[in-house]
Length: 262
Figure 1 (cartoon, rainbow, N blue to C red):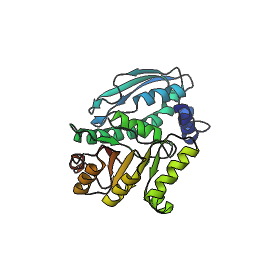
Figure 2 (cartoon, rainbow, N blue to C red; figure 1 turned 120 degrees about the horizontal axis):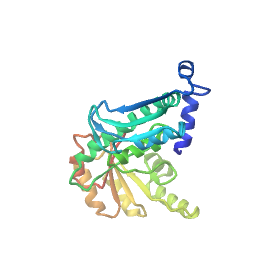
Figure 3 (spheres, rainbow, N blue to C red; figure 1 turned 90 degrees about the horizontal axis):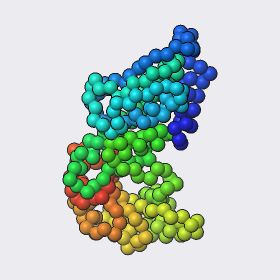
Figure 4 (cartoon, rainbow, N blue to C red; figure 1 turned 90 degrees about the vertical axis):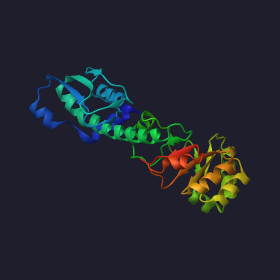
């Protein structure tokens, strides 16, 4: 979804035929000024999106940006000033605030995890567990917070999880069916396979032909062993039950990637 389509749908949801509160009280030609005041310390995100939202509402709105996306902010900081038609400013206000509050919260949380991994090779990845239709905003917020994007959807990467493996019959059948499917459809997509234990890691390595192995709900000891078994033949990704308090311990086992659930 692009920003124009997003704003169109947001207007349809929130305003429809008109903001009757503003239309009743504010003259069509009234102009106003406003500012975005930061009310909590953290990482700010969504300023560039806010700029585009105001532009879609009314291209004549003047936007004076003071802070860049990804900046650390404190209570009382001013992110930007806006100047324009009062009816349009009020119509866009709640959408901008909703977007920026959501994105800033995600960017701030992501930054906490990224900071916890300081000095290690492990990278923070997002997931598909996002708010419907807001994925493009939430994944952008992860980038702003210093994380990395996983697949955007079901269309741009293959992930063989327990359901796929069980339905196919076993790990080898799931991988063989997938590689045959990609070849017959002339698709060039990376394949990731979930492993539930060390035996499955060994089986995945035996079959081969994949690029990443997800180590799901592994203990520290088993992750360390799995990384040694894989030995660079595929990327390693840890997920399941990992918290900010335990993240660094898992990362020190040598995994390449960590899945952050928003």
